[in-house]
Amino acid sequence: MKVGVAGTGMLGAAVARRLLDRGAEVSVWNRTRGKAEALAAAGARVAPTPGGAAAGCDAVITCVRDGAAVREVAFGAGGIALGPDRPAVCDMSTITPEESRRVSAGYAARGFDALAAPVMGGPDAAAEGRLVVMASGSAGAFKRCGGALEAVADRIFYLGGAAGAAHSVKLAMNLQIAALALSLSEGIALARGASVDPKSFLEVLNATYFGTGMSRKKAYRMIEGRFEPTFTLGNLGKDLRAATETARSLGLELPLCSLAEGVYARAEEGGLGGLDYTGILRHVEGLGREPPRGAG
Ligand SMILES: NC(=O)c1ccc[n+]([C@@H]2O[C@H](COP(=O)([O-])OP(=O)(O)OC[C@H]3O[C@@H](n4cnc5c(N)ncnc54)[C@H](OP(=O)(O)O)[C@@H]3O)[C@@H](O)[C@H]2O)c1
Image (tube, rainbow, N blue to C red; front, side):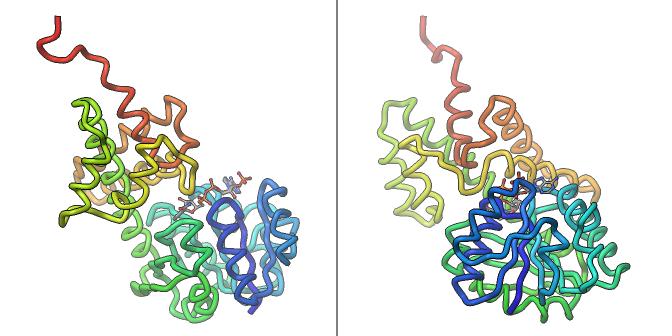
């Protein structure tokens, strides 16, 4: 299996490493070349352009920040769609359904089989082959990308031929992430504000139906003030903007989504965008400036 990976940020690098571990021939490209070169020692071929990474491959995965970046690696100078080969293209980036539809149509117009395949789970899950994939788009591309997806994921949901379907579900999923991180942060802030050890809050929460993977794992790092990123707050903010834009385009009002978008945007403005998304706790804890009721 020959697979190209265009975009070796946190997630793309873990995907490329996992593919190498599983015996694939992997070629990589990244805008900041050093991040791609870091994969050479693990056996990846470093290409000078996204099209170069796609050359000679059965499938090429794109994993970049946003819609503009996906278009750039697809159709910009040295882009995948300009190359002589026609690998199946699998976009793992989180973008809007509308952007995904446009990118898929652009590939199709140039003779490429394109699949939208956003994922749940971060670099650690990719490294262990435990991503959850939501895929939609060309059935042919889904088949051709199957080997690469099975190497990195243990659950793969094919949602049909409509290009935007996978990203609609992905944005709905990231709304869950944003809301959970925010409600955990507010719970921790409330416990601390009342001079209760936030571990007690987590112990009680995790003894109930309402505990989650996040409250059982990441929440303990949150209360220790550890926010080393596996998925940045800035990227989650980008996804909340995508979700609100998509809701608006559908004529939907999603009050929690709009509220979360504003809270994460203010956290980014406060310089927290490079932290893990759970760093939203730092923003929440920085808000409590009013004197407690009854004081003075
Ligand atoms: N990390 C996760 O847990 C996770 C999980 C699911 C989905 N995702 C999604 O997967 C995508 C990548 O996430 P990540 O965590 O790997 O993010 P990241 O570490 O911030 O990496 C972003 C990648 O996008 C590239 N990029 C940004 N703008 C570009 C442009 N205009 N042209 C070309 N490349 C560009 C960056 O290149 P440079 O290195 O040159 O900046 C880098 O390779 C995002 O859409 C994210 O929302 C992430």
